[in-house]
Amino acid sequence: MGHVLDAVLEIFAWVGIGGGLVLALLALMLRIADGTWVPVHVVIDDSANGRVARWFDDGGVGEAVLTPHLVRELGDKDEADLYARRGSRDRVRLVRTAPGVRFTALIALALGGLGIIALVASWVLLFARG
Image (cartoon, rainbow, N blue to C red; front, side, top):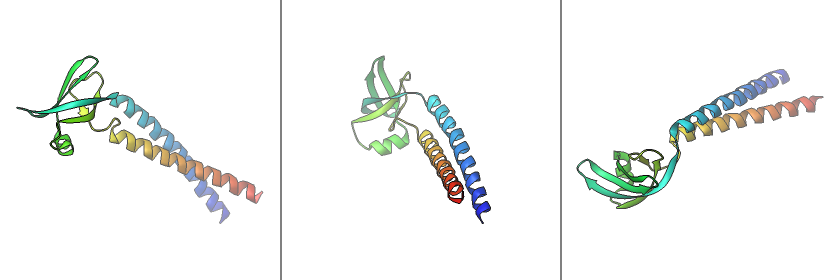
């Protein structure tokens, strides 16, 4: 029975640490591709295109037509604190980091943690039998 447990812990260690590293690298690439989002205070107004958020930043004035999701989340507010993509004058969202980036990073941490726990358990069993 001890050899089976050793094999299972070894597999969990390799898959956990290896998969965690691969997903951490993927999360880093996704984060870089997502760009930099800075907090902005927007004024929300109605226009012919729908609800529009306008804000001032270092480079001038930004204006973004709100998505249906943002319209639902913000309701009838006239002002809000959102995040605008640096270098773009027409993109805003509710959170700084994209949900896909956060999800990938959390899965990478979970897999890495599983791998480390399996590795430590394997060492404990190795020295306990010795």
